[in-house]
Length: 290
Length: 292
Image 1 (tube, rainbow over the protein chains, first blue to last red):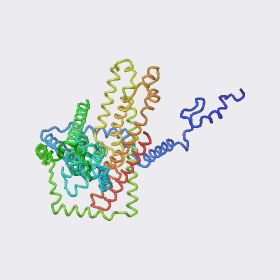
Image 2: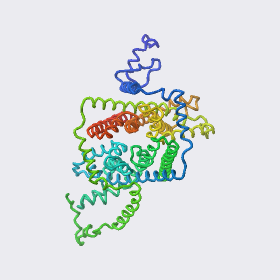
Image 3: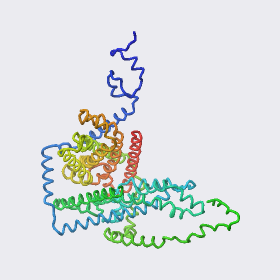
Image 4: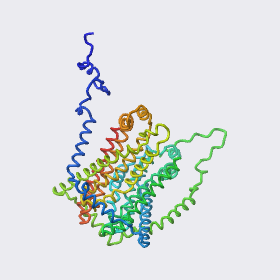
């Protein structure tokens, strides 16, 4: 009974449980920083990153945290009203909305075709396939995907000129990177049975792809494409700010000239369009997954 | 490709005819395929008209000359120390804008998602939620949806007008859009899965914040953190785009170089940008794997 642990001398017992998850209840909480704990290092690094970001950005807090800023913001918002709803302008906005929709649809179709064309060399269709183009094509897909639509649009303006075609091509290029990668994954994960059955009969690779691999993954490819279309409508709406057609081009034009009433109409149209797409895709998903 | 030997036909019967010989030589669905393909092309026609899609314009001699000159000027890359220093500074500003934006978005998203989560309702413990809290939750949810459905580029355009050119507009734009996205998804994550531990705590008289910290958070922390990391990665990509409307960072530099037709600078900036995106992708994949 001599060595009974007392609350003020817990050291031997604590050493008996070296690194338990739970802290023995009589002990103080563990030290905040422990050099052997990865999460501590990670948290410290995160804190440093956040603090360094805020310090180095010389953010203009006064511009939006002062009374005067609030007043100027209020004036700015008040200038929006009333939105310009004259029939001529509404017609123009409707045409721009249709152009946006057409850009996104055509861009997505082109991207699906290009993505499929790139996904075939980017995937190993059978274990015997050497697939020597696999990693170069994947690199190409990564590059296509890494550059955002807007940057593609700005680059394409030089050769395609101002207008919706640059936007369509930009959407097609970026989306083909995204879709190509998804398609390649889908092709590689397709069940091998039907393809093997054809191959053992001596059917060539092209027909194996067309009659065994592709039909199996087609529903998945379609659903990826539809999902990207939904994204692309949103992207197409804003892409015009660099001059690539659609609602965005009108928006940046009228905002640049301080036509605030027209800007308000355009913003409303843009929000309406995004909301409609969201609602429609939510409803469709609900119907399809039920 | 070796043809596997087919099993030999049993004796006493005529040899089975080759299955391939019986099969139709042509695609049986050929007509249907051609029909659907041509229908699709007919439907695509108005889209092509609306988007003024004339790809041959790209090959018009004068356009071809301009594009060829521009692409040819990509090489050599501009690598003088002064420009590289500028690129390094702008790269850091891009990352910093994304980080600061996501931090402010968290400040917005965490309280809103706590207000929107139905699992933390006290009145819902005994049947239906009371009317007041239900209306409040719907309102918060609607606010989150509005915040996230305005594209960050539009927020940035608006804020550039109010607070002037510079990173403040970009940070605010990211904060608002991503606040909406994070808040909505946080609320959905918190509501998914078992609410049993939370309800037990609430029934035994703990506060809602205590129930969140001790029951809800431990169950969903990994998922919440990994979604946040993923959004941080997206924010880096979108902060480059925000530069095109004057919010600073790599995008603004890219815009300037493009307007001056300086191909070498454009190529350097694009390479740095691709490397940055790839790096963020790696870091975020690694972090999400460590969190899982």
